[in-house]
Image (cartoon, rainbow, N blue to C red):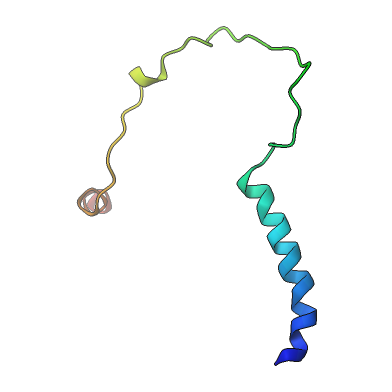
Length: 66
């Protein structure tokens, strides 16, 4: 069983290295000296169009029935 360990170590290292890209994507991109592009809807209030519901087992049960 121990003879597989040297073969699995590079695979485990590679998968751990690649999974870091999914946790913090783009965090290495520098933003200093970049032009700021202003959009027409920068001051748009998204809270007026979004409703947040607490996820509970009862809500999931209701959603499954529909």
